[in-house]
Image (tube, rainbow, N blue to C red; front, side):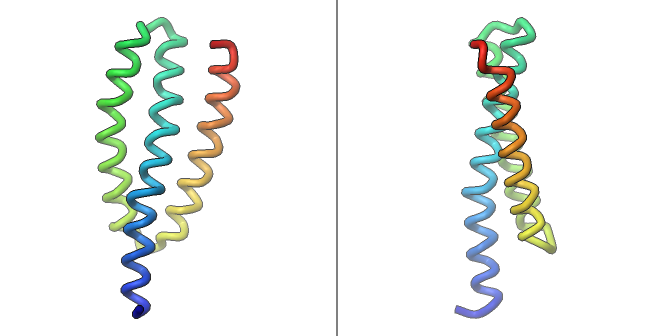
Length: 94
């Protein structure tokens, strides 16, 4: 496989898998924050899901427009780790 072909494969994997994991952890954190602030659980999940579709699209576009996919990967890992820590701290009592 050529060098540019492997770059395209890496970007596709990062866009589909990485953006999915970032979106799912963001969705969970957002829903927990909304529910903790007093919004009914059904409304928090519905709003979070709608915003999750928009976030997923934006992340996919960002992966393909970035010049450095490894920098995007590092940011994805940091976002996932920080949101999972936030979910553990905030959602621990629920």
